[in-house]
Amino acid sequence: MKNRKEKKGFANFDFFFLFIIGVLIITAIFLIPQYSELKGDVGSISCSAIRTKLGKIVEQYKLENSDNDMVPDKPIDIIMLKEKNYTTGKYLYCPSGGVYMINSAGQVYCTKHNPELADQ
Image (cartoon, rainbow, N blue to C red; front, side, top):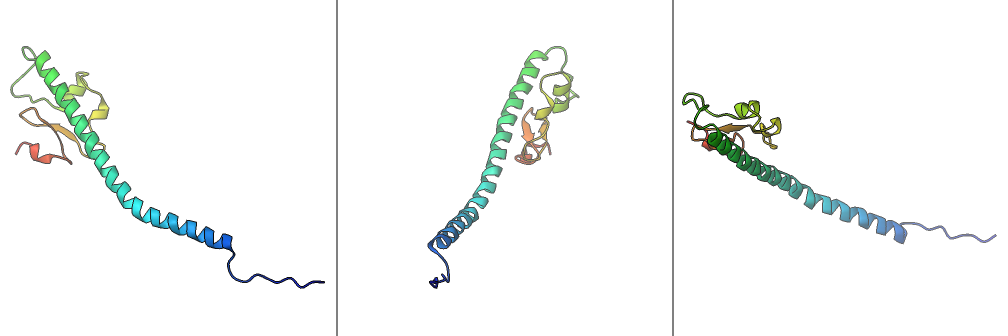
């Protein structure tokens, strides 16, 4: 019988496999922080788009109800617009966790992204 020489150490395949795992780990280390930053930017952009849409809904409400339904003491709010079927419930909350409100000047703001527009 011939004695077979046993291989000791790593084969080429083992080094290649370790190299691939190393590349994946390094890629993950760089991409995970960028993903979380991108996720925050997407929430801010969608919040801005929803605020713009709600601002147009407020203007539409003011135009349609300027004569009969506007009471000076009763401000416009998102809940009232939902009750009068100007908007749906999905526009009550910001995707990032804020709440949409309307100040006394009729500007729509988010409690998370631009709370400086709130009435003082």
